[in-house]
Image (cartoon, rainbow, N blue to C red; front, side, top):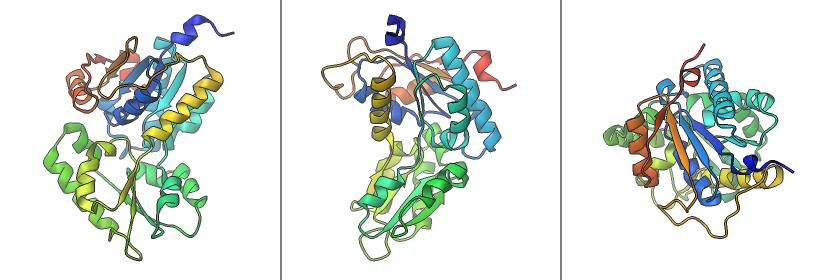
Length: 288
């Protein structure tokens, strides 16, 4: 039987910046009595335009810090780019704990599409990764995927630059082609980065109300719940989280390699929570 300390140990969640808050939001709803440690590696972002080796190094640094400093009982890599580049190394290094990664939800998008054409917005590293290419190869040949790297969009979301966000969303959706229900049009759009759900309203304005927008937040939260129930003790709840609140006993600690005040603002804006983000320790905040 696991020790009681394992029951109350937190779940580690990390992203290159604030995008992973969209996954944390789903995790809070799915596991309302668990504790979480959220890390935004904003001081080393964006990951999406860096080399794969760079992303692997940062991911391993943060995972080791979470495991060693906070004794996390599970790890959620709330970043498509970090998952694509580093998930294999993370699984090898942390085989003792449940580990959940992200991937663009192109399979459920294919099931939902009626025109057989699915658009995918993601970072350049995610789209070029072996993991994503292997995922594409497993998809049915009856569905066509149009892929669009979105350079600069993560940075604009991090800065909350509304003008830049609108311009980039319009540019990248236009580059994908026609949207709608006509033959050959894109009727389903995959948000292949955890930052993108926070600009879903802007993307909706660009593609029209009939196009489905699909992100991976809720499926990842459900999978995390399943893995924890199978491998680790849960702090069970009898009721779902009320929107905008954290249940009694819930605690979320926020850390960042960037500016804590910027993470605080993002948490308040997108989760409706008051955060007092802390700076990462030098061990996690600097590469070797």
